[in-house]
Length: 173
Image 1 (cartoon, rainbow, N blue to C red):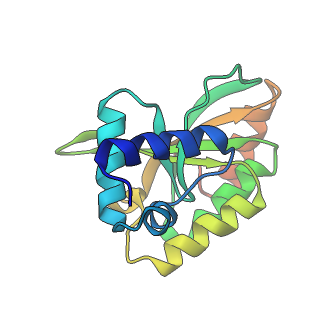
Image 2 (cartoon, helix red, strand yellow):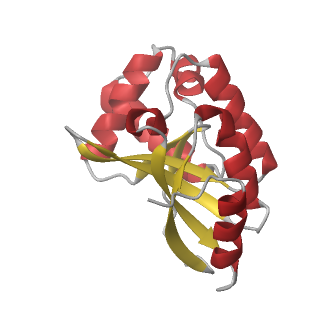
């Protein structure tokens, strides 16, 4: 069993070698420690400057690579039952849902990394949500939230907004 610093360096090495997210549970099993120990290790690594992001699928290193396309934030509002539909609409135009953002009364802006790029990512996220006892961040704000999205053509943003508005999901204020 690896100890502290040695285990943290092994976590970084595994993340660098993988293009896929790796869950805390998988790391815990691999290193013979609890999931909470891994969560603590990742917190220490992030505090030391490692660009580790937590997604619904697990941890990934934030790869600093030139991304193509455009990035924008869209404001939406819906109940938890429309979450999958919202994501599917955005992805139907070839976009990626990078994150979800809510404005919390006490903590200010809260951001959850999503990095949802395809239908499989949506299914994985929704399955994890159904199995967990966790609430969606949007449930803290009466369903109002932002998504940062990446899309390929300048005209895609208007199409995405129009499709969300048609379903009553785009926030109108």
